[in-house]
Image (cartoon, rainbow, N blue to C red; front, top):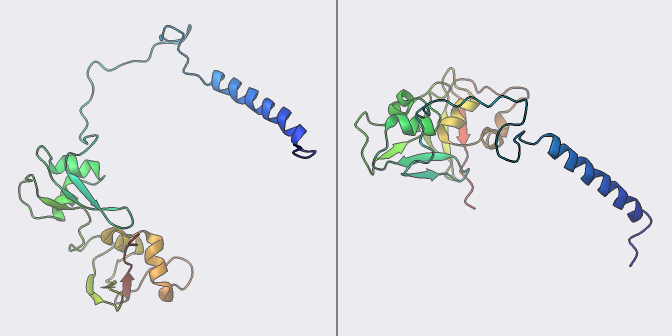
Length: 190
């Protein structure tokens, strides 16, 4: 079976590429010798005497509810969870996380709001006025609202918010004026 006249040129090119990659991988190796120690002439890396405690657990023991955009919306706390640990895991401060929720001690089974949908925020201080015929939220803007603030508060990607409001875009950076009704898109169902 013939693969055409160009096939014979591919084999040498593939061999050259494979040899180059093998050499590159060898040159970029870890620098450790066969015994696992540092290569000759290289100092050993300094290792701290005791590992630093991380405020964020690698995996939270509770469960996270994601929306259709795969963004975290709520977290159900488990034994051992703390406001600080949950906040660090979701990359926010404990103060912000607490402002989204009732100021009570954290208990196992408690549902923690990760977005603060019901709380006015910097860049999203407006409020929902109702829904449209497709069940999408209608949000009334206030001075200082930004598309990124609104998108973050309601757990939607910025591009989805813009797509749902094409009638409001006038080119350049879109900043909705105060009093504008912005449509918050529904998350995909698939």
